[in-house]
Length: 96
Image 1 (cartoon, rainbow, N blue to C red):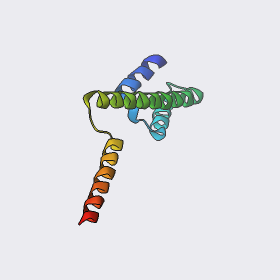
Image 2: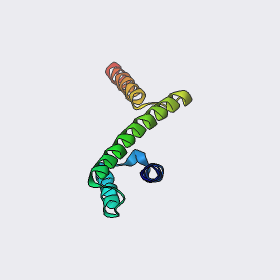
Image 3: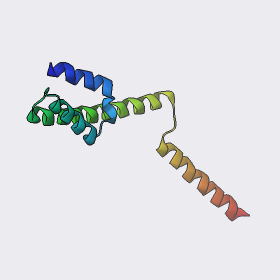
Image 4: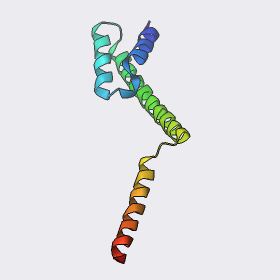
């Protein structure tokens, strides 16, 4: 039963955006309903946060991989171009 509850929450909650406060609130709610003991509730909240962090990291990797694949400029690329433009503008002003 607990596994079913956990799986439902993982899928339905948007595990990537989970905060500690939300995880604690969910655990407290399950404790109030008598579905988890206090110890199980704390473990559940910790598991949620752990899964959230892993999911967030995995999503970041996927986004990074995809942006490289399709050729989207990164923040670093844009900053590097800004610096080059600034240098060129400074050289141009210096020649006048």
